[in-house]
Length: 332
Image (tube, rainbow, N blue to C red):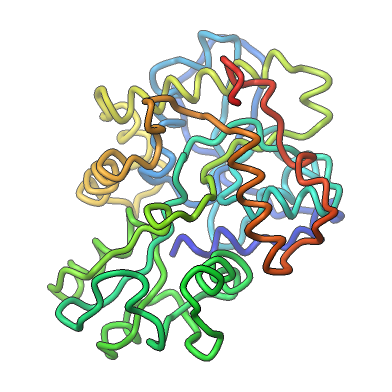
């Protein structure tokens, strides 16, 4: 379940030891600057643009020799970056970036490949729940990371209370057993698995479509790399943006082949439906068709929301968690 990727313990940045991660097989590239890129989960369509850039040689054409290192439930990307085990990595959501700023960690977000956070709430059909607001008073299954994450926004916006929270153990059984219950998930994942598992089409509410201001799938870079080799960071961002554009709007087969090889548990039908939802819900491309964008205004909106609920002190210099220098033209 994707919510695990939000369970980042930022204090672990101080640790120098990390578990070895699996490097995915990739096409042979011409000699270039080595870049180890850590993902936040096992190979899947939610990383499709990175695999597309690798498969189509977009990184190699820009002088980079990229190796994608798969994540999973035991992988902490900021910890890997802090330990020097990888050069770049994925930050799953905006809370991770502000946590980095709060801990004064020398790591920044340099691009956001998901313009919308894919987080959803899922409810049973035919129960009178037609909007998120209708879930007030209903039990809601949440993982620990979500309670200190998007749940603070839901409480502030819809008047939800902590009395509604039930423990989510990353299986759909408790949700399916209780028609009044709602469950967290990703738009590209849990709704499809619930439909396959139980034969019901659940109600799905994308938080971003209700005003949730967070980004997703951000590229994280250590300050040292930004200072020492900004050209490589810029090349990686540009190639990744091109890869995402091609994965969504071109032929996804090159990326899918790498994903299926790297993650034998993945299946083509899951990839196909996830890619379709990334397009349908506008997860990757902004309203004006741009990819990878970030803006000061969006980051301020997110910080204002989180700090108003006591997640961060209002004095936090949240801008230390990201930079717009690698986005062209610069986002306003």
